[in-house]
Length: 168
Image (tube, rainbow, N blue to C red):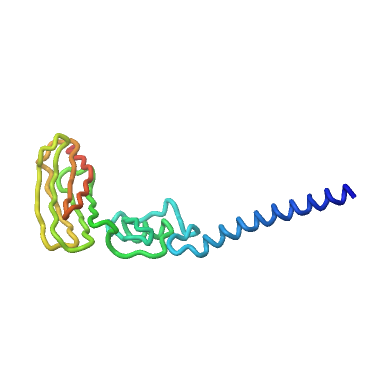
């Protein structure tokens, strides 16, 4: 009688472990299938994407550099443009003569661009009004070699990027 009870307990404990494992697998699979934003089966690290800055706002409320980067991260849905009120990109970096700045505003408005060195001395300033996108060259050939900061200001939003000026 004692062995029979022990056998029952062992069988029940195996059933419980099996059910727990099955529930875990089902919940994981269910989360995978029913995810409304990111499909982890489509995440492809190291996907070669073009360098163009054409930001998209993913359903996860994260701004991606372009559609290729968003889809490589498994994003299922996105809208063109930045999730944030303002996003900028500078290219090339390091720059020798001409720096190309691209800015994307979520809503049309004014934008101020300025460049300072590490001591805060301003080397460049330009104001733009009524824009949603800006693709603009900035001549930096006259800047001394070193580290600079490119600032973009739209309303209450300030975004900055580091710039290396280097002439060979």
